[in-house]
Amino acid sequence: MIEAHEIGGLLQALHIHISQTGLQKLALGIFILVYVMIVLEKYFHRTVAALLGASVIMVLGVISPHDAWSSIDYNTIFLLFGMMNIVTVLAHSGFFNLLAIKALKVTGTNPFKILLTFTILTAVFSAFLDNVTTVLFMTPIIIRIAKVLDLPPVPYVIALVLASNTGGTTTLIGDPPNIIIGSIAKKSFNDFLIHVAPHAIIGFVVGLVVNLLYLQFKGLMKPRKEDIDLKEFEELQSEEVYPDLMRKGVITFVGTIVLFILGHTLHIEPGIIALFTSTLLMMWSGLSPAYVLEKVEWTTLLFFVGLFIVVGSLEHTGVFTEAANYLMGLMGTDVSKGIWIIGASSAVISGFVDNIPFTMSMSFVLKNMAQHITGDFDALWWSLSLGACLGGNFTIIGASANIVAAAIAEKEGYHISFLTFMKYGTPVAILSTAVALLSLYILRF
Image (cartoon, rainbow, N blue to C red; front, top):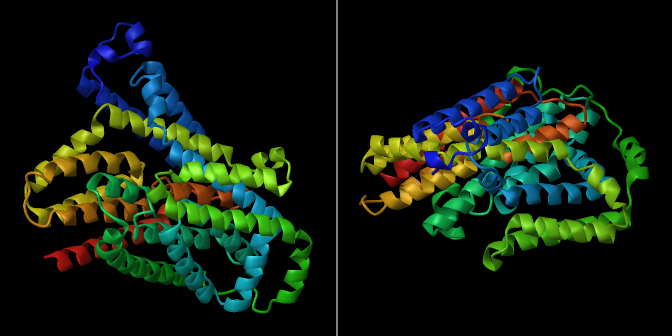
């Protein structure tokens, strides 16, 4: 936590002395301003908004540049960068087009079958990979299928993202908050499978039903092209298929996933693994590194850099600690009440700020509380996991997977606005989180 005498930047240059509480209010005010700019995306690009907020924080000296840099989760940045490069090679080889063709042969032109198949696959992949990797892999496929069927891609992309965040909740390695909780609370992969996965699966089923009903109500489940010559589509895309390059890309992708699974045992961060394997693929593929790097979503990476610094100022000035302590004061030593307070508050907060620093702050508070609370304290760890992960479905900035999927869609010419995402995501987030917490509450008490 920052002391008043440690303030640098413009505040120090102008001999402006601000208390700890003042710093917290200033950091919170800048965050709110950035958030408003992101919501008003018609006038401000979200990357510009995040970088502006980060710049103002460092110029004023709310936190030092050193603390700002330390706020950036390099594991996330490296993971995104590496997987973007692998996906670029796979896309260039025609891999996604080929998968889209195979999927269409299985599901036909039935949007219900398409949505059901791909959301379930996405949820399963996200449980054993991570949700960012999964959306990087699946989003291009669903966009291609939607194009062929003349369906609106945006609702289907959002459906995959919602499934990805829910699926990632089920395991230790599926979502960063779970990795944090597992590390601090000393919980194993099996602990999450036993105590979190059943409730997350219930939440997934409820969220899927809500999404299907909403799309049906909006008339988005009816194909606009009833008869499609799949052979013609396959021939149309055949010129983009490069088998040798595809083989190299798939081998690298599978190897990366295996290392992800082993990474926890080997004590190697997923981001480092992705950076390493993607660099090897650039060497092996024969493609120009300039071509591959040009395809990187730099605006997305810089958005995360800016947002990490803005959110990091809330952490460094103690805003998250104050919020966590307040929540602890509300629940006291009542674990049953704590399930709802921690779960619901984590869902809401994680929907509007990055869930990584919040989960970290709350985890340390829970670790201290565990020394004074008797009973089934583990239930609070599981409620934090469910709330932080499922709450990422509230808004487009609630989880890394949301931003990445939106960037891929944007690149394909389909803009997903902040309010559009909320229209689909918020009902799913509310109901899936509520049902998952209710399931946890009933089974625990």
